[in-house]
Image: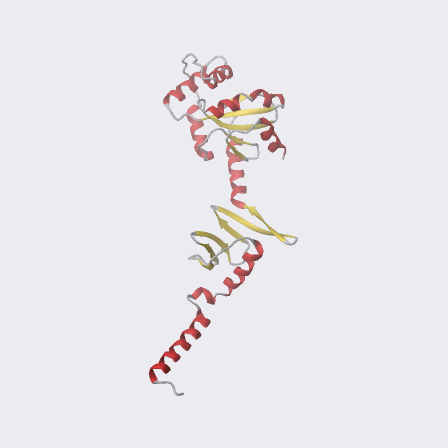
Length: 248
């Protein structure tokens, strides 16, 4: 049966739409051969990861892997992924892939460089030895006080504890200055850790400089434990756990 002109026009229109969609899709990205490559590569690199689509980003050779409101960036060659503020290098090992966190690696080095430049003469120091940890502490923090109770364990393992102090209030700053200026610095500091009062003292001191170090290290919680390579342990952990991580 011959189609009416109206039906024929509708038929031609539908054929045109089907042809257009198969040729260019819903956007320019569907013509990008890199997207086809990346879709296959992402499924290969992270088999369990689900995504809605991959599309070009505003930056050349960078693509967006989109899943709902979550976005991960990947280079056109699939060798680098940027997610959660971390740049990850994609490395193939045998039949699977692993990720090297380049951001974390650089951050470790940066923290280590800062800490290595801080002299023992500027810090509250407990113990001796070549092995050491750096600890950001607050004299009024309960978990910092719990950590301080473990000092003898670290000393038994010949691990030196280097304290950098946070003084968020004038009162805590004044007490820390008094401890620093006392005849027995460590004894006075330990008394403050136990909530005890010590005689008020004043002298040249590095307590203000400690605040600059804390800001440079980018920490705002206590205790924050830094191993000698810059590895950060957030919060209290037993000496056994900390020493175990030092060995690894």
